[in-house]
Length: 293
Image (cartoon, rainbow, N blue to C red):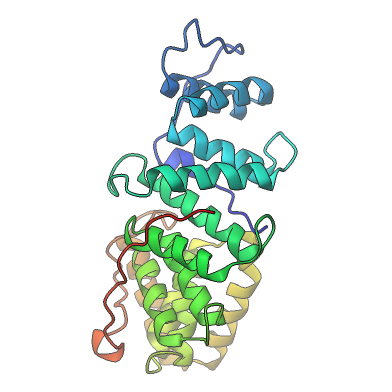
């Protein structure tokens, strides 16, 4: 399946630990599931896979959502163990079942939202369960609306853009891409930039389109997306006028300066988003409760 490498993101979420002594004993120093999770993550970073999984599994068995989430990605990505999509699917489905209505601003919200997206990827890819685009849409939609997940918003944009849930709908695609771009997704910024430059779903806005493509290119993208992003940027750049190129570059540089490190999630982009008057208004659909299997 198409996986998203997520372990580096743990550091951005504040999961930073000190070095362990490489032996997991839940009856000794490890007093709580949170302690076991911290111990296990540090052991995993140190290459002690068996010890790490023992500790993380212990925390997961105690209902610690971050440990369950990490186990899911360990199996999905084959991090020190044979890749096991069935095990990952079941773990993500359990998180979706049990935490769909968790506090959307709580400390575990990002982990839960990621589980929704990961499970949606499985339904969309057909690697474990039969391909079910509607189920994937429901999972992405809940994460996108209830948890405001930019990853889920971007996946919805792609589904509408590619026509995976009925006929292609460029208006809905640009709407979800805009939300994800505002929430800092470089992939969504690239898609939105392409649509703005080409006039897909909105009146053509070449300066804003090239600016968003430039921002996405400078921030970097996942390896699987890099070639497509560079191609879209080069095509737009070659078609833009000299004045459009200069203005787009200035807007992109302003955005990056205002948002500090280009790898940081942005919440207040300087580049203006699509004018509301150019996009038909559509109320966000209500969150859909989890219905895993």
